[in-house]
Length: 83
Length: 152
Image (cartoon, rainbow over all chains, first blue to last red; front, top):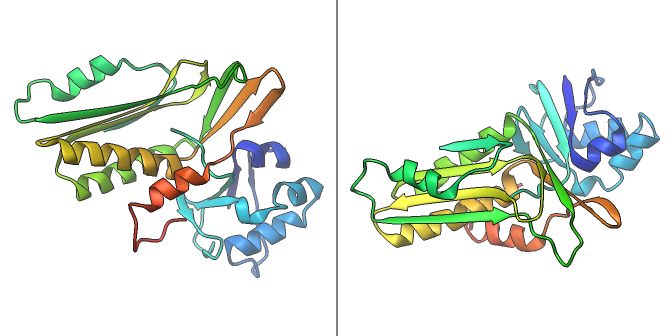
C-alpha cells in the first residue's frame, strides 16, 4: 500500500510518500502507527503524540480503529487548518 | 460547485456567474477568508493540501449542505500555495429563495471545511516558519451542527 504524509508529519518523517508492505498482524490504523514508530527515530518522533495524528484511507477521514485491510492509499497528517 | 486553485478569485465575478440568467434567487450570502497578519507576525503563508482528497471532501461537504437546506446554488473556492497577508484564501457563496437557508448553509460550509478539508497553513514571520495549530473553537463550531453524527 501507498503511504502519504502531509505538513509537519511529512517534515518529521522526511518523505512525502512511500510504498510499504506491513506484516499481516497490522490490521488497523493504530497498529500501523505502532509498526511505523518501530522503523526509526524519525517515525518515533513524528508519531510520538499519536492521538493528534489524523488518518485517511483512500482519501476519506477514518478513526484510528479503522481496518486497513482494503486500503490502497493511507495518509497521515496533523489536524487540518484550512479556510 | 467546488474549485481548488492556486490563483486568486474575483468575488464579484464569481457571484455574477452564479446568478447569471436566473430570476428565482432571493438571497445570496458570501463569505471570504483572507490571510491575516497579527501585528507583524506573518510575512507570508504557504497552504499545503492533499490533492484528490481536498476535492472529495469539499464535494462531500457541499452535498451535505444541499441536502440540509433548500439551496438554489452554492460555490466553494479554496486556494493553495504561496499567499501574502491580505490575500484571499477561501470563498463560500450560497443562494436560496430566502435568507435563512443561505446564511445557515454558508456558516455550515465554512465550519465543516475548517475541520474536514485537508489543508494545512504554514506561516512565516520574523521568528521563522511554523505550522498553524488547529483551534478548539473550530471543532466546537463544527460540532454544533451534529448532534448524532460522529465526526473524526
